[in-house]
Image 1: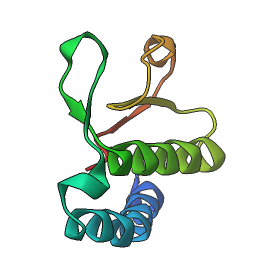
Image 2: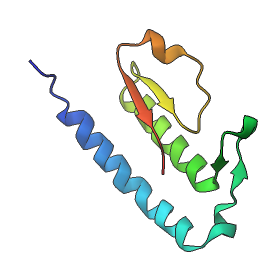
Image 3: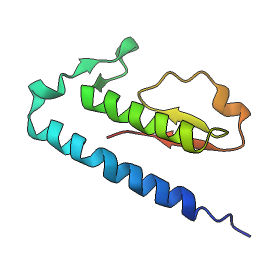
Image 4: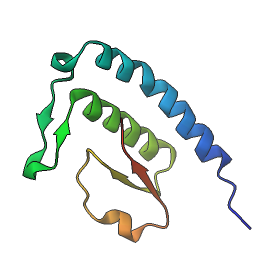
Length: 93
């Protein structure tokens, strides 16, 4: 029997709706407002919007589902996710 993940889906949709206005606002201001930088070790670009939305999502998941692990594109992967039963995978934008 499949797990009922409706609470998680509702939470994820709500969080996406919360973050969307900021992402759209930043994108509409153009490249300079996004302040793109290169990630360490040549892992590609990151913007202030990526970082802010990543942190918003990670903080919200930690508050709502404290026992779940998180693998987020703009956060350091400390490997703790490998010890948890469930992991959220985040790509903020």
